[in-house]
Length: 215
Image (cartoon, rainbow, N blue to C red; front, side):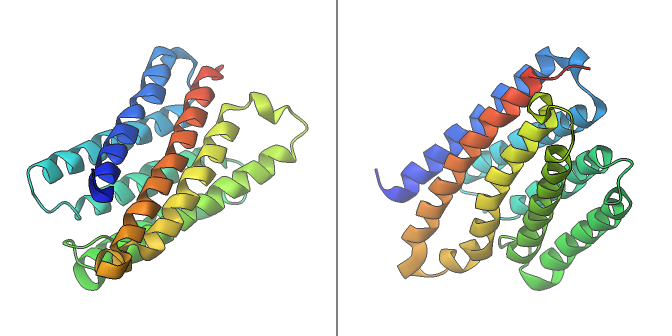
């Protein structure tokens, strides 16, 4: 099995494991806060969209345009998730503008920069960086709180987002260039495998967060 084939099946396997926190959240739906419900909806989108992309790849259909839907899921639902988390704090008033800017960048990337036939390197990197900043800010607020942050489900989610989106951010910076050069094609798949390894850690943390949910 060559590296590209291994990477494809590794990505498929990791994508399916996202069903675990989705099912845990569904089983504990009575305990979920509004923020956790929004995050659960994000996970459903993050599960469905890659599987559509995988189905297209199996049929030999060019699927790079699916990256735009992945990023749209991130900027809208995770943006709204953080807006709820920061309610009553100064970052909340800026998040609506951040969501709008993210959506605008997606359209600009699709119609004028990369094109929908290519991966959205510019907008994807910007949106991933947005998630990193917001997750870091929430953890900063949480760790400075006198309450026990280890019992707070959203702390585990934000740690998971930092892990997953740091890998995604680094990958999104280089994936467009790596795909178009024979010499770096192998590096692309090695980075993709590392990205999905970090995603496995994040999936564990998401599952743990739903287990700790107490309304």
